[in-house]
Image (cartoon, rainbow, N blue to C red):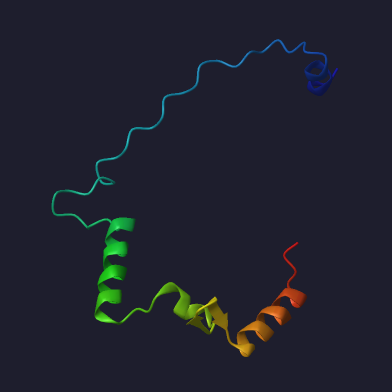
Amino acid sequence: MSTLQDFIHHKLGAKPGPAPEPPAPSASAAPGPGGAKQSGAVDSSAKAARARAEGDLKGDLFYTQAQARPSVKGWVESDETVEHKLYSKEEFPQG
C-alpha cells in the first residue's frame, strides 16, 4: 500500500516531531560599529527630497509626459496627451 493511499484515508502513522531550532546568526554576518551603513527607505527619501529642492529631480508628474495647463474649469490636457491616452487605452485595455 502506498503512502498516498494512507494519506487520503488519514491513516498515516508517522506524526511530525517538533520543529528544529533555527540556526544562530554567525558573528561575521553582523556588522560591527564601524561596519557598512545599511541603506533604507528613509535615507533614499531624504536624497530624493534634497534632489527635488536643488532642482536635480523633477516632480512625479514630470516623467509621465502628460501635458496639461490649469484653467477655470480645472486642468486641461493638450491634444497630444489626449491622443496618446486614447491610443494607449486601445492598445493596452485595463478592463
